[in-house]
Amino acid sequence: MSTMQSRDTAEAVVRAALRGFATEAELSALPADEPLRRALDLDSLDFLTFIERLSVARGQRIEEDEYPRLLTIHSCVDFLTTNA
Image (cartoon, rainbow, N blue to C red; front, top):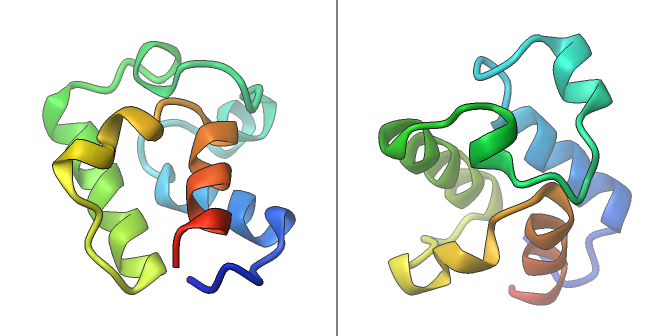
């Protein structure tokens, strides 16, 4: 994903990567600063699946040492818009 990607587009990518872990209504209502694992009750495998989906959308692998930067929708958007 290009650093020129808009924040709105990046947020749509993050929310799309979360599909299947919650209903559309739950995802729409999820605050951007709510911790994802707690809010959506994501276990380790679910979180890894989410990371893999973001990696595919980004077109580049997300390394394990970057996972702490992907805790909320807001932090994921920051990550996607500042890391090419």
